Length: 205
Image (cartoon, rainbow, N blue to C red; front, side):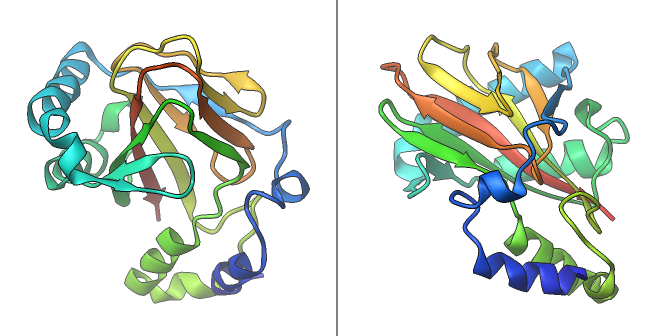
């Protein structure tokens, strides 16, 4: 199928219920992409000074097992770091990035799933219409996409982030690049402390 057909096809499946059919637990899961000391310091300071004090006011309750926080300051930082910076925090330079913070409260869970990214890809196709007709599959995507996660606070016992059976345990400022297409992943928070992460969706085209 081409990319436009794939975007339409995504409406016909459930990325949670159908994850075992379309996911691949033997596929690449994630890669550690360490930030430099200055990058780590900058993003953690940005979080502490500009975002954390207002989190309760700006968060949006989600139905996937976490709250969403969209912030113009965070998006501007992500554009600079992942689009303008040739090093791009160790993840490679992207053509498009979307950034938000996910906060998983104690007792919340996001069930196993794969990330199909139809909405993100649709925006790319609106920008580059010719991509609609490029051959696409989960194994050989027409557009190279990644999910980037940056920890904003240290991991505590009971905060689970599992990707293809691999458990990520982090320190504040740690960064990973994840395979969204076929890596089955889930999160759960059985601690008594909220778990904030920056989530960035990036694409190269």
